[in-house]
Length: 152
Image 1 (cartoon, rainbow, N blue to C red):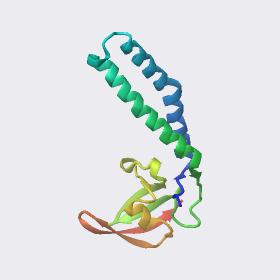
Image 2: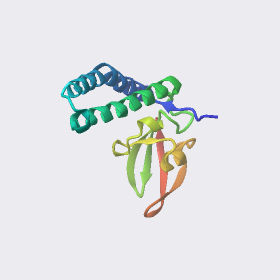
Image 3: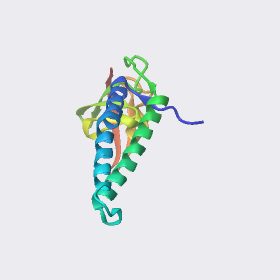
Image 4: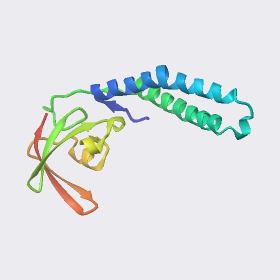
């Protein structure tokens, strides 16, 4: 059985916007570029044609991927009362330092902006836990203990 893809409402909106941009703007521009390159003659030595063709193949793959995700994903929302899960923000204390992470679906993960997937090592460890719980996560520097301060 396939795993259910989970997205937050904002993640869904972001993927819908990306798909619309690809289909309505970027793909038509790329097709124009490909057509112009094709009209320049010998295609075997036309690097612009080859590049545009490769970009179009990549873009079509991304469009198919996004369409699949948007068709099959489940939008989740929660107020954090049932513990940490997709759609919640969790405040944790690590060695006396406080950090806030947003638990998101795989397609929304952005660790630099503290959006972590529920399937990542930290996301998996936090999922299902409540305020006051502690979790240990294996990190490159060894085990790190996170204490959950709040779940919103």
